Image: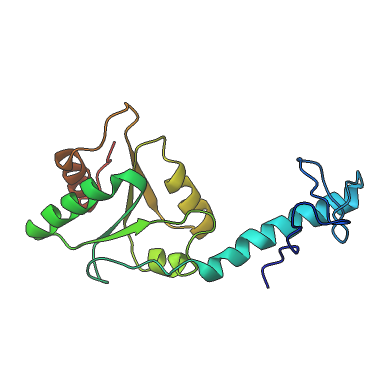
Length: 172
């Protein structure tokens, strides 16, 4: 079901651990240097990660399904993003919010959620890697708003970015 091999309890005769980054044979776990086997192992590892999505809870949207803008966050941005989205709503803006807890794999319903919005803003405390992944994986118009100075987002700056995104203006 998960494609995981049975666990070899340390010390069990004939079930010795093989530690290292070397490619192992698909069937035996023995170290091999065969190119075809290497390709099979890469595909197997990718499938193992993909199957984890079955255990990742679906992403939940906070806000109206017909919002003009979806704000997508992850990690330590949650508090400032929630506060800025709440403030935007108090100002009368139709804004929805999603906070991701799982990035690899993404929740299975994320593509469907993202596809329901014409405007997506992804504030990140990095160089915009999540927005890039969302655009590549789901072909959605995710716009990046980044900050890389070692300081957290302030609600006022996020609110300004949200309002610029709603007007269709550049957010950087």
